[in-house]
Amino acid sequence: MTMKLRSLIIDDEYLARQRLAKLLENFNEIIVVAECRNGKDALEKIELKEPDLLFLDIQMPDMNGFTMLSKIKQNPYVIFTTAYDQFALKAFEVNAVDYLLKPFDEERLEVAVKRILELKKQKRASLIGQKLKNLLKIHETIDNNFLNEISIVQNGRTKTIFVDDIICFKSDGNYVQIVTDVKTHLHRMTLNALYENLDNSQFLRIHRSIVINKNYINSTTYIGNNEYKFRLKNGDILTSSRSYKSIISEFISI
Image 1 (cartoon, one colour):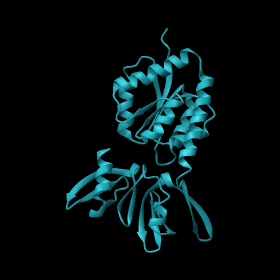
Image 2 (cartoon, one colour):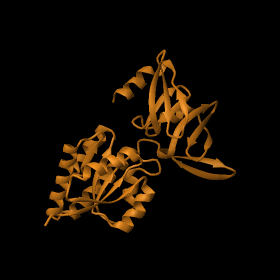
Image 3 (cartoon, one colour):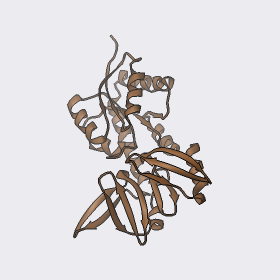
Image 4 (cartoon, helix red, strand yellow):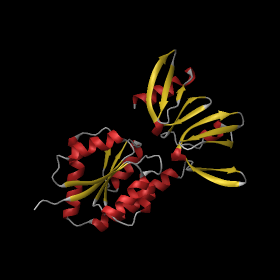
């Protein structure tokens, strides 16, 4: 009898979810029981569907994949589907939690699925659970070097904004505009001071007064004169300055 794995696809990109679901149709061992567009949705579906396996994107707007994993009570197998930093992925691989580096093909997907099936066959769920905990600790160690959240005071009350939810930062004199999907906040801090504490694998400086969260970039277009136009997921269009051409070129070539 063929071993079946009830699986959940978790990714904020619709096309990425659709592509993976289509690829998984070629694997008799995989049953996709739900697709989730964010961590909050995934937590609800995991509780309801009790999947054996998660195909999990790491970088999502509401909460990243690691934060989501830390909140679940179940102990599913996990295959990361991510464009995450290569160096960090080396650490993940040591802990035997597989990952698919976007864009991946069916051949690489097959390797990941077979690895999980073999682990399930050997009934090593408890071992995988421990390795997943080790992975979360590694992530915390890596992530703690950078700014994870920003606290601002509004109307006498302190509000916390998670860095993953920030679309971009814009300099405004001695203040910084913090742009999110919900609203724009004003924070008393210079952009230079703030940028020093941001993870460069997640944030891209395109202008002396603009820093963009790479996860919210829809498209990048060269417009000539060493300048680029960035279209963001919230509809904003931002233009880079010529002095940041080399940094942007490096980002585009990755």
